[in-house]
Image (tube, rainbow, N blue to C red; front, side, top):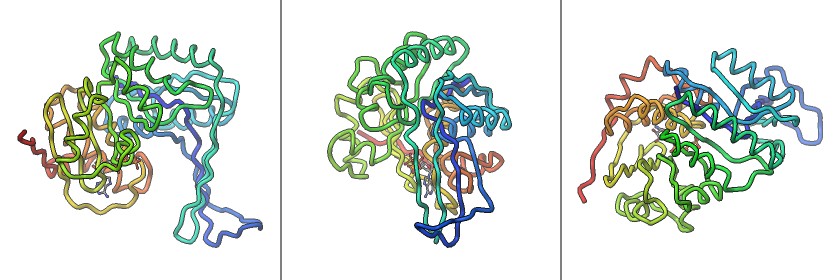
Length: 312
Ligand code: ATP
């Protein structure tokens, strides 16, 4: 079973308002509310792939209850650490072909709550074979919080796939114990290295050979419609994908993480892990829903992904 971690989940509310007026009343007829947060997207895609998944993280209040109900509706097993504060709403107003977002920052956790969650996480590790950790940390937790989770995974010999950015990612990568896999995009790599990272194989290969990346078994640099550049062990790969009809690319990175998790859990060969990850990412872009794939199309697109090992 795969454990997905979401430390600051949300209820994502979308308000389609054709003629949005500032400083006036706007009425909405068709409101959409879904359980959101990168880790929950990962959980949904794993479930849609027909694999066992358990969603964990931190939530609270009536918004937290709503998130749990939504997960139950999708038959996603979950075990969240409950806090006394409300989880957050994230609002997207869809107007004039644009999207204006209002994102609550969410609850502030106490140090004790952070420690209690870690204990919940430690106990859950007994029943799982792969862990994914996605997204930012809630307020109140130190930026090195994910380090402790990666260490707990390592102690139990469970691969941890970490998909976060900024200081939370840097703190983990500068630590002695590294995650098993990471999935940065070019923006996240640039943030991490402090300079603009180019997409060429030569440039990416040079960046990924830096000290900070040593000891990470899988580094999947996702390149949107251009596929991915990958370091696996000491080997480098370029992964190419076909041109497809993109409906909504949001959440493709999360779908890619879901693909990596499922393929690692099945202990697939390297090329198949990468093909799986690219296919789930592509399938997500073809659907309107964020973190949603149509799994019946998997085989067809899997066969169209090309994995090429780079000669060093
Ligand atoms: P997000 O933050 O929206 O979740 P990301 O930046 O983490 O995305 P991307 O690199 O955009 O991740 O996409 C992940 C994968 O999804 C890509 O490697 C690819 O397989 C697929 N994908 C994304 N965008 C496209 C696209 N325009 N066409 C085809 N496939 C795409």
